[in-house]
Amino acid sequence: MANNPQKIHEAEFGDILAQIQQSKQKAFAQVNTVLVELYWNIGKHISQQVDSNSWGRGIVKELAEFIKKKEPNIKGFSDKNLWRMKQFYETYEKSSKLSALLTQLTWTNNLLIMSASKSDEEREFYINLASKEKFSSRELEAQIKSSCYQRVMLSNKKLSAVMRQLPQDTNSVFKDSYSLEFLGLSASHKEKDLQKALVANLKDFIVEIGRDFCFVGEEYKVQVGSKDFSIDLLFYHRSLQCLVAFELKIDEFSPSYLGQLEFYLEALDRDIKKEHENPSIGVLLCRQKNDEVVEYALSRSISPAVIAKYETALIPKELLRNKLNEFYRLLELEE
Image (tube, rainbow, N blue to C red; front, side):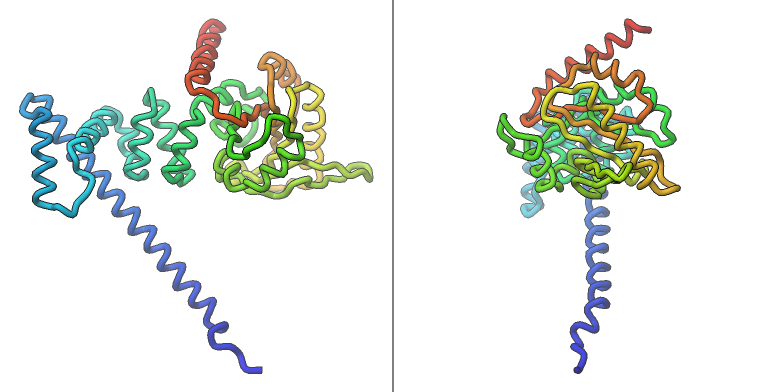
């Protein structure tokens, strides 16, 4: 049978297509860098002119009209956007650390972060997150609306001693609560409903937990003493270089759940973990949790575990911000 010439060259064609796609991405990144630098420089000029009382709102409006007249096909230079460029420059001009990162993000993502963040720390968090996770504007907006910064900071403050002693740095990897409103679950959902919905919406779930998480399987079987046991969801984290077991509970956290999770982690480390990998980590995802009960349960635990809750509706950002501020106040009292 004669070989199909098209089939013979498909792999070669695929390589060329990959080169084209990579070049497009590089070109876009370069264009984006130039644009963000341009907006920074325009914002700097306007800021300096306003500070010296040379320019006011009228002059900036005249500038917008001048640009439109001379370059009618160029968009994005209305007087409103020119003032945003001024705000952009003034927000970051005194922070060389942050200003160096701005060209890694699109202008839209920069505007989202600038308008939503209340502090340099929050801005830095979202800049690093958006850059690392390659968020689209839609994905970044969803993370900001779900108070990702507050949820991660709360988790960092509550990391157990065992988690802090791991060879890998788990800071800012996990969250105190996970926003799962994209699942569309009913209030009376069962554990199986939650698990199936997470697998069916795996792409959105990985955006929420972080793109370094790679899905291994659901109902992952481990065998101990000739008996089979199933881990609800198993992931591998590329940066931490370890397996991460997610156990799902549709009720409030109970200390007894931790014993089950520790058993799974032991089985993973003894029988599944490769020699070069770090110790496995467990995440108990519960519908509710009492922070004091969690702290007591983790204080004597010898396994690296995170107790988090999940939300099927967005948590008001102000509520999380107040909770984080309260936590900071408690830490100050302890000192």
